[in-house]
Amino acid sequence: MTNIGIINAVSSYAYISSLIKRDKPKPAITSFGEIAKLLHLCKKNMECRPGCAACCIAISISSSIPGMPNGKPAGVRCVNLDDDGYCTIYKRPDYPKICGDFKADPEYCGNTREEALKNLAELERLTS
Ligand code: SF4
Ligand code: SF4
Image (tube, helix red, strand yellow):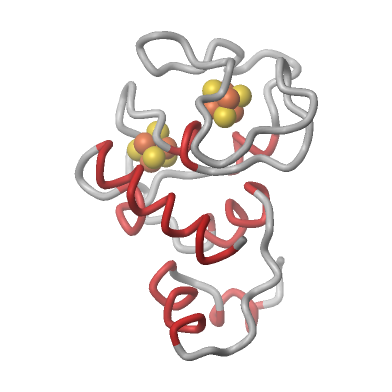
């Protein structure tokens, strides 16, 4: 995903939403990784909200991750989250690259965990 034309074309959640609202073909994004790649392009250097973990719940992961060999369905809490909303395998050798690629962005992280859960659930709905 280095083509600048693609980067410009899919540079925001709003744009993805608008594509779908206009009944144009949905972007071919069906997994956490693909969503992460798209959203990564519009990151605005937001600091991740400590203990939020909305993305570890709302978004689906199609590939196998530690403790979830069949991936993680959307809306299901990742088994690697602790009770305080922190990843227990962060920086471990088997920490999924897909998770590391996902960056906080006010566009979908919003101002609160609840906003992030809502935005990311909507994004999942639009892209599945
Ligand atoms: S492995 Fe860690 S970062 Fe990835 S979804 Fe699970 S808790 Fe979140
Ligand atoms: S939803 Fe955003 S703020 Fe919350 S944990 Fe994920 S990246 Fe961080």
